[in-house]
Image (cartoon, rainbow, N blue to C red; front, top):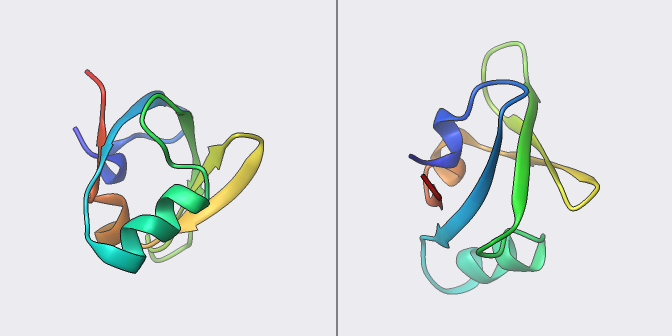
Length: 73
């Protein structure tokens, strides 16, 4: 499952970060590291971006970006 499929209020653990180069590094700098717990907190009225609680901070990602983050089963 990927981060964009997480339902509102649901928790999961990051398994792997996709993407390449600066984009992948930026996600990791924001706290999305393997083993990190995340919770989906909401979304914009039109469905994009999606917000997540990561290490005590709210992080907003586009659906296409969230689809690159794999979650542990």
